[in-house]
Amino acid sequence: MKPKWKLIALLITMGLIWAGSAQAQVYPAGPPLPPPAFGMIGFIQEATVDGTVGGLAANPLPNTDPRAGGSLTVNGIKMWVPNNTFLQLPANSMTWQQLFDRRFSRAIGVYTPPRTNHLAGQSGLALADGAPRAHFPSFDVSVIGNIIPHPQSGTPQYVVGMIAPVAQQQLQDLAGVINYIDHDGSVLPGNIPGRFRVGGILGDPNTGALVEINDPVGRWGVIHSPDPRFTTDTNNATVCAENGFPVGIPTVAPRFLPGGGLDPNFVGDPDRPYTNRPLNGDARFPFDPWIATGAPLKTFTMPPPDSAGFLTDPRKALPLMVGDTVGIAGTLMKVDQGGPNTAANMFISAYAVAADLGVFTSPGSQPCYVFVEAILMPTAEIRNQPISIGGSPPAPIPSENSTRALVVGFTSDPTRLVDIYAIDVSPVDGSETERLIATVLAESITAVGGRIRGRLRFEPSRSTGIWPPTRDYVAKNRTGQVQLPDQAGGLPGLMSGQYRLPCFDFLFAERLGFGNPTVPNDFNAVPFLAQGGQPITNPNGTPAGLCGRLDPWPGP
Image (cartoon, rainbow, N blue to C red; front, side):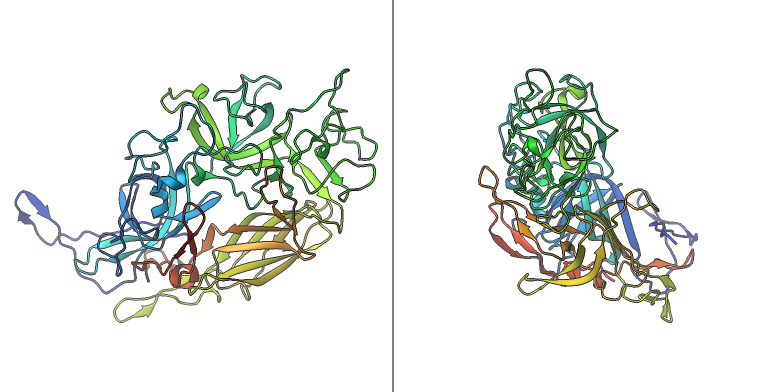
């Protein structure tokens, strides 16, 4: 039964006590209860850095310490964010204090006029924050925690246990066909190379949504990031085909033959070569009846590297082209921060792009790509064990504690096994240990019995070997991982054959009866919260220590 996340109080009139002009209400005392759990999703109304955490922290920190926590107000409720909080953004992660550090949010790339993301001492994400700011102030947050008494006053305090994620809109999504690409930045608003239009008239630069990939290192095309906190994951392919093959925006426009049609031998961008998109009608590949002859193929199997007679190279990304269908998640920003709130002055800074392409790699050859779409993990090892005691005399609270787990992903070669690992982190030195939790073989047949070629599914009935939960998980090809060649600008290539991601969804216990005490969120069952060990980095990438145990501890 899903908890209602509401505090319910029964008012029993005990008399009227006047203090000045205010009426005091007296509630009857009751037996001790466990800390009620809460979960909230809503706009960030106010946010602060406070290393004392409102006086709740056992070991207060200066506000300049990257491990410092603070306060967060959502839906009119002020919550305390413990010191050592390491939170998740859509494709990035950092500490609570680093959200407010302008060195982490400074725009990368040439923007005219220059961008100022937020004022000093503010995050730029709260409704109460002042201008200038980089984006529209509608950022929301998903938090869970427990309500615990203040150690001196005994008043209830909302203490956050987990934040995942912080986003402008957690379900924001754009889907459509790419209708124009500004390869050199000479046409579209803002004059940023690599911006493109989605959902408009093919070939028309004045229609469709304006999109820019948030790419501070040049992994997917030209280097540009209006706010690196909301970057793509440049170490994993969050800009990819549906089955994990990396894609990007070419830095060079395609070339057309004198008589019309795309030149099939034109490379263009060496990191995203057009030769990786053979044309429909090429006798070496199956004909696709769903697209026009001469159009770039959307699904095919790519030969191994350096295959005789082929210009394709599976070690290089696929070029996104006009006519491709994409799904995009990102942050809505203004082209000109001081300009009007009109659609013509807005663009989407994308942190994830999913191209409707199904390009597979040759069976058994390298590289082979892996992508994880969804992950759900339990916080219990044994189902329906009582985890909370309350009442007077103390008694266990009937609860449902699920041990269900789920991992869904894809691979570009469904003939090989994929291993899924939990990544355990040492609270002493931050070192990592991979713990194998599953081995999966992808589905290899399309359109038969509901199968999708290349899809991975792991959904065990028991959590044996899965518990305890970790923050990060990684899927790896059993046949090994291959470092791709350096890109043209010297950026090291991706490590193919693996995909690492954080878990956004954990299953906590729920009460079994309406009106029973709310079962607290058992954060003791989550080692990276209870023990710490998450390494922190400075803005220049150097180590800045480790996160410890959450302080104050949110209970139970």
